[in-house]
Length: 290
Image 1: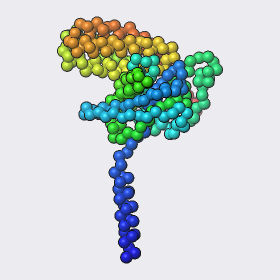
Image 2 (image 1 turned 180 degrees about the vertical axis):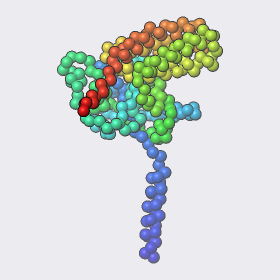
Image 3 (image 1 turned 120 degrees about the vertical axis):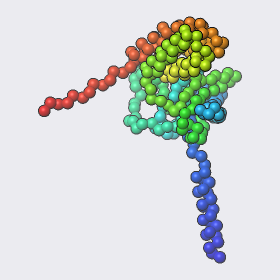
Image 4 (image 1 turned 30 degrees about the horizontal axis):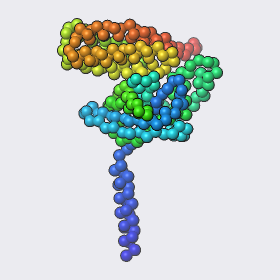
């Protein structure tokens, strides 16, 4: 008789363990709205939604509650997220999908971040300040939705206004921004060639889609540039890319060719700015001669 309670307890314990194992693994996804001018902006009454689309075409939308300004931010070893523009605003959006950051020593705020030299803070300074003091939106999302390739958009509602981000593509790729700009140049050259050959919709459309995604991937450079010049050129090219997309849908090859050529000078400006800001490689250490 004394074995019955023990057996029941063992069965119950096994059942709880099995239920815990059946729970899907999740990641804490965070969304930060980035304002270079006011890094700790409150964004009162704002809400965010994340739409994830899988390669199969299936999509799912999540509502991310807003975390109050000043709430302690856990897990500061998280990797910096992907950055895209928030269309129709001067803001950017950072999407953190929960990856761990590479080990790094804690850095003190730079003089720019402290505002002692009068210069505009760097993008990294702004991110550090936002992560420490700004509001963010958070939700736990099944890890399998973020493990492979996906496309994502963030929708932010501020009062009666709604804004949608440029498209994110996951997983985050470690590609240099100057290489992305080179890909934009190649996509424009391909569009011009195909338009000159009067290629049809099925040949033009994939290249136009690729061009728009590549321009979106240059958003981190627009965020980093405190002068705003890079972002002006990027937004100009994005507007042209949207018009190119419309011309492609209408079968207007001559219009596609004309607009593709107009992107050239703005892209050259962006490539020049990226070349100026690119860090020079450190010289190899000298090997002492014996």
